[in-house]
Image (cartoon, rainbow over all chains, first blue to last red; front, side, top):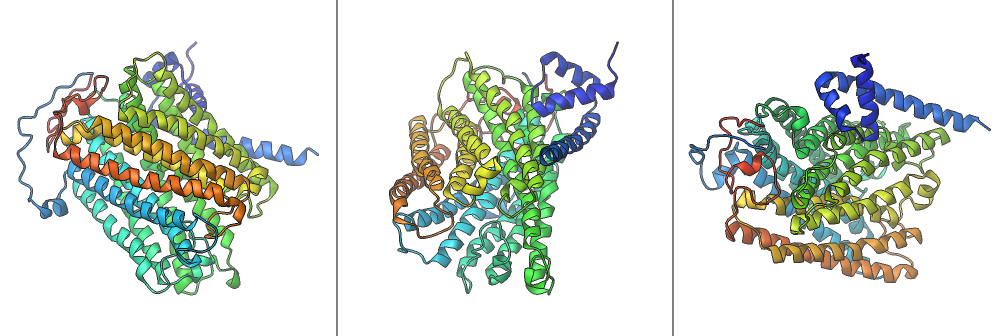
Length: 64
Length: 525
């Protein structure tokens, strides 16, 4: 079943954060995703990333 | 990669000649050259200040400059090198190379381009000229922290004005670069087929537009604190100096990436050329660059671990900073993988590129050491930090600038540079750089503070080694000037494709690149 493009954008941005992308995945990205879509998901993921770091810090500072 | 284009009217231009040509020019190549020369001059001005600093630090005690002047020298050295040397050099590369690489006839806003450049000399004059006003130049450090920057004399106002002007120039330059890249690419050149240098500059330009206004806001608040009775940062009036630090470093940390992302771009061209292989993991490189740029906005607090942030704040910035090593590591891995099993030759640009990868990585590692909050609390404001950021900025940014200059000089001048002298320049630079800055790690670990003209006697030997290295490093750069002038005046004729393994549209036009190129957009395959 084809992956919805929003999910595909999240997958691409996840690999982007790591800085790695397989050639096949990359070819799929450039044919199936728009630049605006990736940029928007990138900003959302940055906010989620910040939230997860804040969550981690909260856990570390409250777990004793 | 092939391109077809017309050159029939390459040398037909009706621009003024002589000095007026440079005042009025809207040609991206002229403006690029002016940026490069401006940056080289500022590099020598800032380098001279560094040598006075190192001469003073050759032995303990006060010998050459008094502590006030010493602080002014460290402040202006940094500002000159950052805003006068490194940033304009990359803008110079952008002006010369981006239109050539994307197949555009010029930058999108050619007149604004002229203005962006001509704002720089007045700003530099304000900055360097501030040594001559009563009280001397700003001595607050390049970070302009209050209260020193509130208490300083008229030179602080001159510095603030200089920062404003250079910020305006950078923002205009960025608008120009973004518009050129997004709207003027050759047919067939999709975003994900752009050369890496173009990609890194596109992302850098967005970073500049995001953070330059923040710096402008911070220094404007300083200005109103100084003259108009506000108390944003003046603790005596209920203001908060720590707020300045937060605002400043929200600009300051992305600024670090502004100075290194275009360097990544240049290195990503040099290594494939001389390894005679395609860049390994092009898409990874693009994704990693974007990722580094986004992360650069959430790590500023690592410059402030000692100001007394809550433990949660320190932890957040520590984790975020350490995570930036992941995409940066991917880039270093990709450069090494590009070289792996390639037919490598070591011409001067490649030497600088390999030097970049090796030494920038050391700077990256010492950055990780400093990212650990408890370690940073010990090492903050010591020479360890000085060693760290010189490994990032000299063997990072400046090595890439030197490598890029040697790489594209044949395209710019039409002549091959003197390879023997180029290699000599590299080895003198690489060796003396390490003599200068490696011992500073030991000085920092032993507790020597930065921005202090005098020091305890046990630090003498390492300081002497560092100072000797600095003088060798400084004078070696005169060799670069000689090589460039020699290359402009003559030398072996450069082919259109000056390097066997080079790829890209810029290598399809003759060397030297004609005054007007790509008047008809090339077809990019």
